[in-house]
Image (cartoon, rainbow, N blue to C red; front, side, top):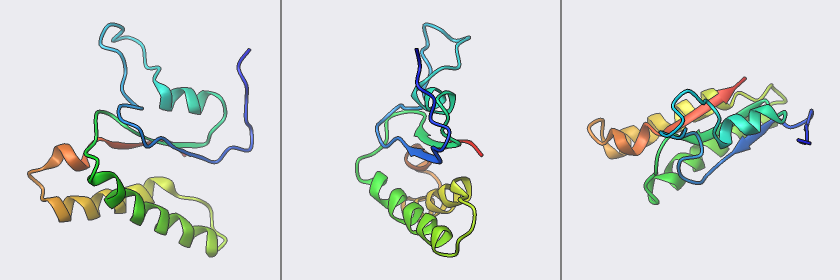
Length: 110
């Protein structure tokens, strides 16, 4: 029996390939990020492939800063916007041509 967590707001999966399917099962859309949505998380941040160790903190620091501002203002969490701003920051830092560093971060859910 699977557990359902109705009050879960956000899961940030900082490991590599947490939003990557299985090439052996191309019709399946289930991966760790989708599983988190399935058990009740409203939003999930994951990665589509392996990420650079040095890039993760560059993305996560502005992401969490933006999320903290949203909480401090008493507003609704908007993780998609926070992730967009964070990956935009990384893209500026590493350059547009190094897209393998900033593209793998994805948001699912609300």
